[in-house]
Structure formats: C-alpha cells, structure tokens
Image (cartoon, rainbow, N blue to C red; front, side, top):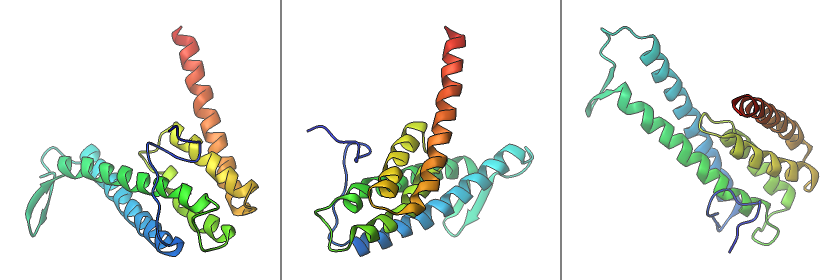
Length: 171
C-alpha cells in the first residue's frame, strides 16, 4: 500500500489515547531539546577545545569521549523526531480519537514544529511538516499553526532556490 502525504517515512503509529500520546510527544520534545543542547555543547568543545584537553566526560560508569557522545546525541535526536512524525497521522485523523480535532491539532502542533526544527531535519522533512502545519491551520482552523507553516514554506523555498542556483551553475 502506498503511503499518503500524511505519513512521513515508512510507517505511522496508532495509540490508545490522544492524551497519553500528547504527554509522550512532549516528553520526546524535552529529550530532543536536551540532546540538541548536548550536541551543540560537545560540538563546540571539539571545535574550540585545546588539543591538550582530555575530550572526555567522567561519569560513574567511567570516561566517555566527546567523539562517542556526539553520534549518540544525533541519533537520539533523529529517533525522537521520527517518533513524533509517526504520531502525526494519529493526531490528524478523523476516526481514531476520542477528543475534538481542534484539541488534537493543538496537542501535535508544538511537537511537530520542534521535531522539524532539529539539527537532523532535512528540507524534505521540513516541507512535509509545513504541509501538516498548513493542514492544521487551514482545515482544523488552528491559526497558531499558520506562522510556523509560513516560516517553513519560506525556508524550504530559500533552500530550494539556493540548491537550484547551485545545480544550474554546476551544469
């Protein structure tokens, strides 16, 4: 079966409660923000640190090198963002919820926006998120989704135009 524009990736998740899923997505947001902070800090330390610095953090389990922490943080960010993306069809569907659609749109708005703004998000992900935010704004009537939608649309348009210029110059 082909996936529709509502689904990012190869699958989507179904849940038993919109409220529990909302809490889970916000937990994922907290972890994304924490790992983004960790990724940024470790990247800065690796870039600006002295070659004489130990480049490791000492924990109860032993020393962990910055080079080990960085890919773990990036992988965690990507995985959590994909979990949020997989929940979007559940929130935006009309048949799987016990709550009003406006509530569902509000519950997924912030997690979707945050997940699409991560350091691992590609222009394709942002384009898909912009479409979902546009749906929330236009179809569900939640106007709070309009500014992020417009921002994504403009950013993706800029990325596409810069990429297009680069490709034209390369040809």
